[in-house]
Structure formats: C-alpha cells, structure tokens
Image: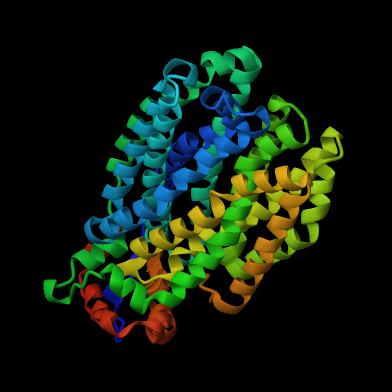
Length: 486
C-alpha cells in the first residue's frame, strides 16, 4: 500500500454504518443482559447454591463462581479470535450470542442445592464456564466489527454505541432483578423468582441471532478476503506473540484499569451497598440502576468529543479524576444520605463513562487488521480474567479480612495509577486516523482528494508494520465496488 490510490480508500455509507452499530450493540446488550444477571442476583444465588456456607461468606462464594467463569474467557478469546481472523467477524458474533443465551437458560433450570446437593453448584460452575467461553469471543469481536465498519473521523462516537449496548444490557438485568425483588420479596426470590430472568434469555438470544446473521462482513475483512491468494497470510498465535508483543502488553495494561473500574461500578457496587453498607437489596440495586441510566448520554458525549480533541486526553482526565476523587466518592457512599450516596456513585459512573465512550475505538486501533480480532480477544480476555472478573471477589475478600469499607477506593486508585502510566507513555493517539493495516475509511467522496494529497499521513501506520505483514499492501488493489460498503 505504499502507493495509495483512489480505489484503495474505503467509503462507508453513513446509514449502513449506523445500522451496523445498532444491531451489533443490540446483540451486545442481550449478551451482557445474560452475563449481568448473575452479578445482580449474587446475594440470592449465594443462598440458593451455598446454603450450608456461613451467611457471612455466601457472597464471597457466589462471586468466586462469578470469577471462575473468567478462566474460560481467554480460551474463548483464543478460539473465537483466531477463527474471527480466518472466517470472518460476523459468523463468530452470531455463534457467541446463541451460546450465551443457551448457557443462561441452563442456569435458570438448575435445581437448587436443597434438591440435588453438591451437584447444583457444580452445574452452576459448568454453565458459568460456558458463559465465560462465549463472552471471550463476543466483546472483542463486537469492538472489532464496529471499528472496521465505521469512518475514521466518527469512529469514537459510533463505537461508543457499543458501550451503550453494554449498559442497556446491564441496566435491563438490574431493573428486572429489582422489579422482581420488589414484587416477590426476598423469600420468594430465593424459592423460585431468581429463575425467571435467566429463562428470558432464550427468546432474546433467538432474536439477537437472527438480527446479527443478517449483517454484512466488515469492509476491512472483505478487502483481505478479496486479495490474491498468494498475498494472503493468516497469522498464527506464535506470530502474534512474536511480532505484536508490544501492542499486546499495552492492551493488557489498558484493559486492566478499564475493567477494574467497569466491574467495580457495574457488578460489585450493588452487593457492596447491600452487604457492606447495609442499604438493603432493593435500594442497592436502585442506586446502581439510576447511575447506569444516567451515564448513557455521557458515554455518547465522550465518544463524540474523542473524535474532536483526541481519545487519550479524555482517558487521562478520567484516570486522574478517579485518583483524586476515589476516596471522597466512597466516603459519600458511606454517608447514609440517599442523595449523597447516589452522588458518590455517580462520580465513579462519570469516570467510567469516559472510559466506555473512548476505549471501544482505542483498543481495536492497537492492532493490525490481519491479527486484530485474535490479538484483541486474547489480550482483552486474559487481562479481564486476571483483573476484571476477579475485582468483586478480591475486594469482597479484602473488605472481609480488613473490615475496612474503603478498600474498594484504594484498589481503584492503584489500578488508575497504573493506567495513567500506560496511556501517557505507550498509547499513540489515533483519533481521526485509519486503523492499523487498513486504508482510510470515509463516509463522503469529497474527502478522497484531501487524503490523496498526503498519502504518508493517511498510511501513518506503515512505519510500524511488521516485516511479515508487508504482503498486506496488495489487499487494497480491488475495485471500489468490492472495497466500499453501500
């Protein structure tokens, strides 16, 4: 691609790009609705599947099962990520969605401990592992799909829609659990009410599968597929680890602080407010639900501004915000005053919204097209498994051991200090630029002449291109009808 031609530039129809984002985000919402149910029913699940355990430790055991599922995420990321780089993003995203729905329904059908004894938590663990395996390919694939289907100058805003889907999924599961808890009461929820949300996943999965199966493949992947056979090179895991180790490490660091904040605010806070601060199950869920709904527009605003002022500035600002305001926010949550409690949680929510609005566009841009899905899926899920999914378990254990309700604040601050170092020193600003390994992607033909005036800037990533990927230059030698989406 050393000589950029007019036909190399990918033109994406704005309506098609928005439809892609909507359908992918909707499927993502369904997936995270399924995944989030467990977190919001953690207290109830502890009573159903671990009744023989001391009540003081039931929540820890429930979160341990939540965390164990993350063991399967790197495996799912490896399998689905490598397949996604070989057979396409669309096919894998349809498969992961239906797997998640099936495993979620299975959880709702598992008999309680009082009925089948120790087999109950074993079956629960099995279902959670399948959920983790599915999620390993879902989120990285969704980020890759949207990043490769959106124009360079609007990627931040459009990719932020993916996180809106995540929040809609989490918020929907929290709302449903809150409503059922309010209507049925804690006793009936333990008896049978907890099963209802899990069973809803079945029809939702069928709807999501149908919608995703009708999507087109991304223009970046289609361009690779249309390259001459002798020029196509499928990267192996060994090649990814050998030639792309630097972006892999950077991605690990970014996902570390991102998912620490994500799982702390979205999955741990309801249980923290209930078990550690004593606000009651319904109140803890309501506070979390209100925050999730409140930050949805903030996510879109952050995504929009990342296209204008750059992504790194927003992420660094949010990291500094968490470091400075982490302790005050948790002190506010301990006040007992409803408005102040919500305000403290909302502060954390704003910082999370900044991450969610920016990072879905930042993370895919770290990798070249030929290895993007596999590299992102592997690193994202390893980091999430080690630091994200274990966040509720580690914090619950630390709070139990120290009897200090401020432990979550210190944990969050430590993660953000690491994040500040990684982003400031190692993450290159890519707002408005083409993805690594891809030609510029635009939404208006009028931009073509401007790009052709400075091909070196348009192909800024050439200086980073590993030697074995120079063959990628030929994949853009296709007609506009093949490389463009209309």
